[in-house]
Every structure is written in structure tokens, then in C-alpha cells.
Length: 492
Ligand SMILES: Nc1ncnc2c1ncn2[C@@H]1O[C@H](COP(=O)(O)OP(=O)(O)OP(=O)(O)O)[C@@H](O)[C@H]1O
Ligand SMILES: [Mg+2]
Image (cartoon, rainbow, N blue to C red; front, side, top):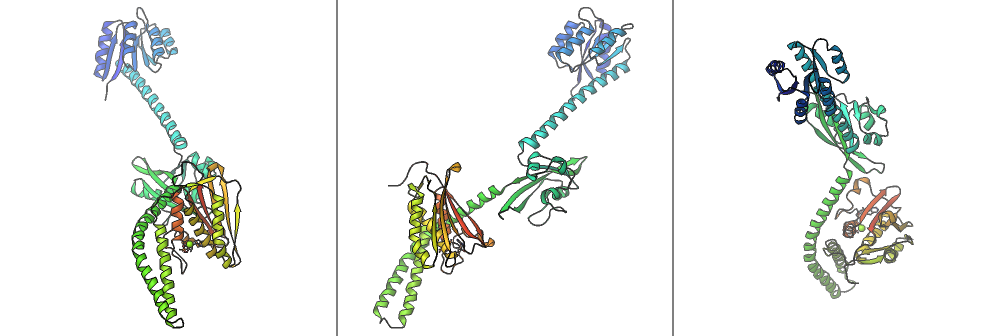
């Protein structure tokens, strides 16, 4: 440890010498000065926490020196040395915030005690300052910098402290939260969290004395998953874990983005594979189809084999449809984009699907907003996406129903919305995750590629597609596309 420094000021050389020796002996580093002016000089050029000064000195006297030193650095501790009969001066010095005074002849023990007190005072002040600094730092950390939910909880799960962010989310005042069990205020439960999607990180940390992390899965009011990442960091006291600091963060957006990315990756690799296979299969399929047709021509129209040949031809046509979809799905070409009014495109989609809908006794009702900006897009692709959604809606709706296709512009987000709504049978919750996966279908004659293709097209246009479905009210798919910005990149 570094030696503690003292500046000793006295005009009598003997006193300087004797005190220098005795103070050095008990471990202090002693600097000396024989008058006030020298003392001030030394004081200004070194870091001196404690000064011992004689009161009566020629030139600048002890009191004057005390004032100057306190002026220079108020935290310096100054011990006064006084002769007999200087008591009034000594008392005066206390007014100027001298730490202590020692009367001459100097008693070593008394001086040692005074010095000890002076250095203790300095240490306490330092600690207090650190405490306040840490306290302020903690407050800033917990309430300002960490926009996550923070709780300090004891080993008994009771809340010791909680930050503003979390209180706001829970709709509680601090007094209402402190002292209650964490699981009561966060989960409205009467026992600690447990179970597969609800492990308690505190329990883990108490067991291992290490930090721990858990993900909790909750449902929002629309029954979508919300994911919370919760970390607990142990709080130690005398080597024991007495609780933990718990941080929780909503990571739903991250997880969704990751899932979307995985979906994209999967689509891309399936796309590449399918493109290769589809291409190879197309030629033999054409051969099967033409050969079947030739055979049909060769035999009499009333021959019973005609029916089987018809089946072969139809199934081959179906294969070709699947192959065509696969090729669509795998299309690697970039969309050729131009500015279009979305209402015009949607109008054409309705026209193209109207007949098929009427065939099932369904009506398609347009509900198009007048105020639509243009959107930069590949017309054929967007048309294909919208038609896929309309056809799905017609498949899901019983005879006599209606399908609404609406458009809307959301100026705040500069986004154009196309929504396709049906009042059909809805998508069961356990299937909702899968509908955008290639080849997922619940239909006998479906390829399960419609929504994957649609999803891919919208993605290539920088847009999003989402679905809200309810088995009693039906389904709405919403496409969101950014309003036109940037250049066209196809031939007009
Ligand atoms: N509007 C809807 N209502 C209810 N279920 C739907 C709706 N749209 C899609 N689905 C479900 O999603 C599945 C996948 O749809 P997708 O368009 O990808 O394939 P598909 O319609 O089955 O086949 P294809 O598009 O090749 O005819 C459907 O089989 C159906 O179960
Ligand atoms: Mg479909």
C-alpha cells in the first residue's frame, strides 16, 4: 500500500526533526516546511491529505495557512500544534475547520490518535462519495439506460426493487410491487413459475450460484406467441447468494425475424431443387399426354378403355399443373417493376376469378379506396399473388358466401394494403404456422404451393403478408406493399 503523506510545518527545526522521525517510524511519509510560504508551495505541488502545522510562526501563521489550505482544497485535514496559552487561537482554528489540535509538548500517542482520526475521516468521505456515485449509477442503469424490465428479488422470490419500465408495463406503483412475490405481480400466480415454457431463472441461480437464462412463452390477446428472455444474475452477500437481479426482454420480434429468415432459406433451397426436377419432368409428361391422346384417337369412342385413357390424360394434366406451379415457385428472375395503380390490378384479378367464384355460387365484392398512390411492381406477379389468395378464399367458403377484396392506403407508413377476406371455415390454430410452407395443403387436389409462391412474390416486392383467421368468422389475408419510391427496372 502507498504510504500516507503528511506535511509537517514548524519553524523550530528540533520539533521538525523529532516529529519527522517518530511519524516516519509509524509508517507515514513526512514532508516538512519551516514556514507558511514554503508549506503552501509544497502543498500546491503534491497530493497531501493531512497537514500538521504550528500555530505561531513568523510570516504566515498557522491560522492563515489553515485558511489558505482549506481554500485550496477544503477536504484537506489540518491538525494544529499549539503552545501553552494559545488556547484561544486553537479554538479560533477550529472555527476555520481545523480537524484537531495538539498542545505542546507533543504527546506521541495523542498525535498518533489525531492522525488516525484524520485519515479515517478522509476514508469515510471517500466511501460515502463512492456510495453516492454507485447509487446514482445504479439508479441511472436501472431506470434510464436499461429499457428492459429489471427486478431485484430475494431468495424468497420477494421483490426488493423494480425499475420504472417494468412498473409501467405492469401498471403498478413501486410501493405496490415491493415486498410481493415476483410470480404474483408478473404472472398472477400463487406459486413460483415452473414447467416447460416457464422455468424460473431465480431457482436455477440460487442452485448454481451462477447467472441463468430462460425463455418464457406467453400469448397476446390475439393468441399470438410472445417470447420473453429472462436472465437472472446472482446477488452475493458474505459468500451466499441472497437473491438475483432479473432482466427480462421481449424477444418476439427477434424470434419472428429469425423464423422468417429460416422460412426464406428453406424456400430458396426447395426452390432450387424443384426447378431442376420440374424442368426434367416436364418433357416426359408432355410425351405421356400426347401419347395418351393419340391412343384415344386410335380407338373407337365407345371403347371402355377410353375412360381409363381419359383418367391418364387428366392426371397427367394435373402433374403438369403441379410442375408449372413448381416452376413459378422456383422462379429466380427478379420482378420487372413498373408503377401501377393497385386498384386496376386488383380489378383485373377480380375479373379473372369472378367466373370461377360464380360457378360455386360465390360473390366477390370489391371495396377499393379512391385514394391510392402508385406502387412499383411486377404486374403479373402481383396479380398471381392476389389471385392465389382469392382462389383460396373461394375454396374455403360455402356456396352463397361472399369474398371481399379491399384496398387502402396508410399514409403514415407509406404502405398500400390489399386485404382478401372470407367468412369461410377459417384456419385451425395448429395449422396456422404451416400454411406458408411449400407443399402444405389440406385439399385433395391442392399443390400447397399457392401461399409459398405468394409469400415469395410479396417478399421480392419488399412487402409483407399476414393472416388473421378465426374458425367462426373466417380469414383475412393482408398484403402490405411500400408506396412507389425508386426507379422502374423493367421494360415498359
Ligand atoms: N382463406 C383460407 N381459409 C382457410 N384455409 C386457408 C385459406 N387460405 C389457405 N388456407 C389453408 O392453407 C393451405 C395452403 O394454401 P396454399 O394456397 O398454399 O395451397 P392450396 O390452396 O392447398 O393448394 P393450391 O394453391 O396449389 O391450390 C390450404 O390447403 C388451406 O388449408
Ligand atoms: Mg391455394
